[in-house]
Amino acid sequence: MNPLGERCRRLIEQSIVTRPDRDFRIRVSIGCTLISPEDTPETLLRRVDGKLYESKQGGRNRVTVG
Image (cartoon, rainbow, N blue to C red; front, side):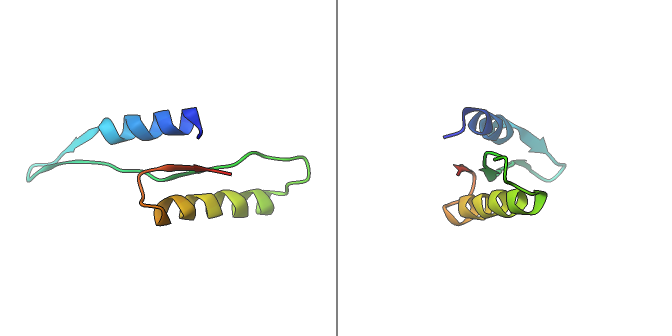
């Protein structure tokens, strides 16, 4: 687990958006990865994008690290 990512997710989840017709909470999916010396911007983006989709497919409103 990524403590910073999870902390951000929880803070966002606790926020309430108020609209004239109703209030609602925001949910967020976060994908995290580490950069390595051999990464290019493209490989890094591809990897983190994959983790984001993993979060969404795993039930949303979660942090996936890899």
